[in-house]
Length: 496
Image (cartoon, rainbow, N blue to C red; front, side, top):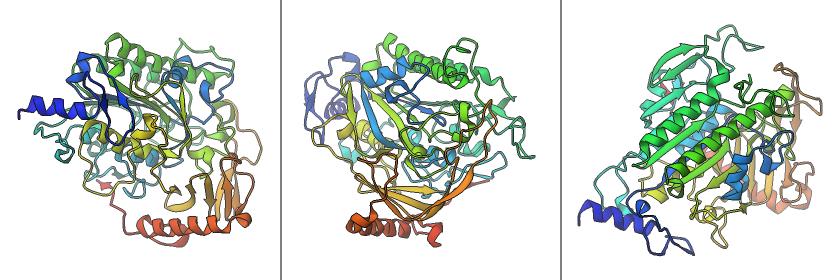
């Protein structure tokens, strides 16, 4: 059987033929009429925002500005109310998204600074690398050619700034952006003395220091549009991790002063414009029906920055904590004809699930080593009765296992955390001081207590015991610094 026929047969099995076909593991059939769709695998666009809170887009309750393009993703696709980043800070969250693993498994549990000598290991497999490899013959592909996706990353990387750790060394054909957070520069209001000038990188070369940050969102978007245009005739993966709305906030003149929410609202409106540019480009090129768009955030809002930070309401706390305000993210997915429009998914899911789900949709071979994400396509496709494949989700802060969720139940283990304790955050880009607080072991019913306010552990000792057993199993795998355990499932990071 020749390669062309094998590819067509594979695409038929995942629903890309003119006739109605049943997706493996799904209960319904789909009709895809476009002749273009018959001969190629789907495209993927992941828009990953920095420090966006749960209530920072219109369809999740934003106030003082509008986000019509992001809201369009919800109207024409699915809104996920219980979707989690795998960490409440930048580096580990991004490591989890791209590798499908808890950041502790890949030994990137903490934020990397400009002097770090570690980064993502060459032994890890990113989504981009997976989409360039030989497909999985076990799924019936039978095609010896690599999947051959065009891949690009435009924006904040933060998985190591040394050349060996940059995107072009981990599956991406193109990279343009900042290697870490945009506040890691000498102008930081509380800058450590060792912060060097902020580099803007193309490929793996620094092309400028301390760039004009008012142009970052525009530059990333323009690059993204050009990449889609030139890749329209082949399958592609676009990863767009915006630097905004991480502080310091910057916005271009076209959105400056446009919102009632001040600079923060202006920044979100420009991000919304960026999403609109992506959607209109896909439509103009006639490939939107063959493209899955995912919108999410790396962690919750940096509340100490007050009027320069977003909102996690009605969730508790924000970035840097294991309360849901730190990790539950406003998430939307759109794929006309494949993802049902205007639907809501309330099952607990995670960014780690994107890698195995994309593997399922493309026939890509999963990494040979352990990953933690699960295939969630039945939920994304809106299959009746589909449930989260996760028995539990684990909230790590650094190496510490601080909480666990299973179904509607969330159990916190005793740990300290930072809080404003009801005080307002700072103004004008200068943060207020956090204070330290502590929570003892506590069980919350997230269906009836989304703000994690009422400890019901005494009423449900059986639930507490079950969650504790699951946590003990995870401690054997990935460890827990609170209990001074290391775990056997960790892999080393990359080192210079």
